[in-house]
Image 1 (cartoon, helix red, strand yellow):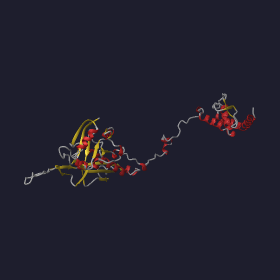
Image 2: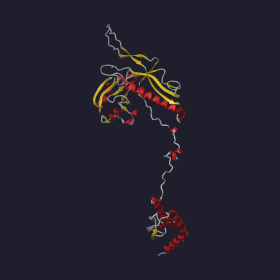
Image 3: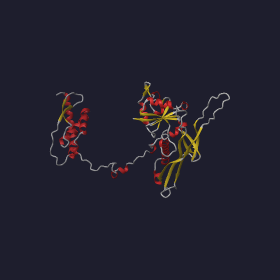
Image 4: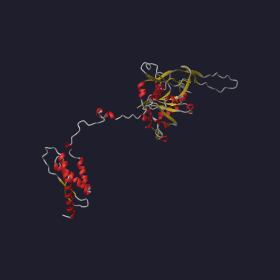
Length: 398
């Protein structure tokens, strides 16, 4: 053999003299008293010297961990590799340790863990991220925000309106003129109370880590706004609603088409088209419109982006309302068409520790309420060809 081999043999001998007593003692302590079988240690080719390409058989790595010779071979080989700075060989021993026979180890029957309170779980605190409190209900522009809002001081009454204009005529010299007059009517209102009520125990208020009163109040206000929108859209409690008013209409009678949209657009009198106008529809109808084309281009204009609130159809914006029927689409000057009547007391937010069960049960009651109603204003045609302030496309199907 070469000198490199001889040098390594000498190094092996010196290391064996130094390590043999230590390894023997460790092996003796690790082995069961009755252990008698000593398995033959498998030897594999591996570099003995990192500077040499010569490979010889070396005890590794597949040694039986249940025998003295196996443990001795592993510990001796690992220590030798370290002193020789033979990192490839040392890595081989480490990898062997990662897949060692786990049967020689005793598994803890009942280790301490945070999953069991009595075994240490009581020592692990549960973190409450109060500063990152997440509000699940968010608000958005509601239908009542785009209609005319009229403040009243009584809970019931009416507002006068003209439902038909007078007409003018050319009159010849000395001829009698025909008396003309408009047709008057009134739109009634009778305010309903929209209310949200919550009770909270004093124990919860004392212990909570968040602004519970503020968050519940905000939640109540959002709930009220949703309720009012539902009633104005097609509810059964308010005097007049969008879906419940007989607007002048065009029947679609089938799938939505580009021609149907054009028809209902032109049905609105030009006097009202000169005012701020808006489309109102269920989100499903917006989905239908996005698939339409007309004049060889999409009806849903990409120039304004793909957010509904930024999109226009024939120059007018879209207002999505999930509370109204998806069978119809409305278009018109909404400020002239419908009104929301609100009492001048406004939105009331109150708390009490004495009302209801709050006193006897040591609770706090929180309520938010508003007196409100809605009704149509103008729904009659200006002439026989055009509709009132709002027109409707009806009978839309899949």
